[in-house]
Length: 92
Image (cartoon, rainbow, N blue to C red; front, top):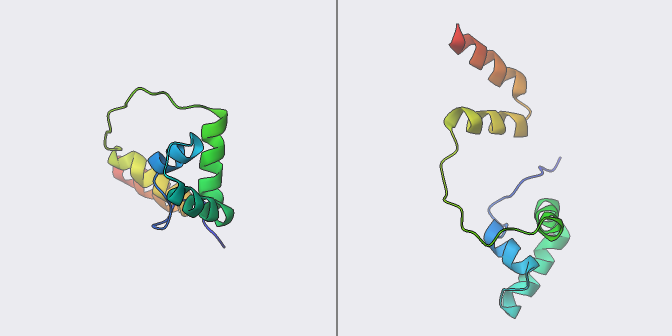
């Protein structure tokens, strides 16, 4: 089973956006093109950028709240039930 997510070999979102906008050096174009053949997640990200152009405005980075991060991890790893049971137990 493959996981639909970035891994350590994936280019950053910034590089993928620059790739989609043709704003990266030629040597990186080939590398990313090969990566996109094998990585469905990054291919989908580049496709997203082509359909929904990104704003040129910079956005301040913020930390994701811990409960939201835990929920995302649980959803991505099919541990929803375990997460929800723990969440409700903590609220009692």
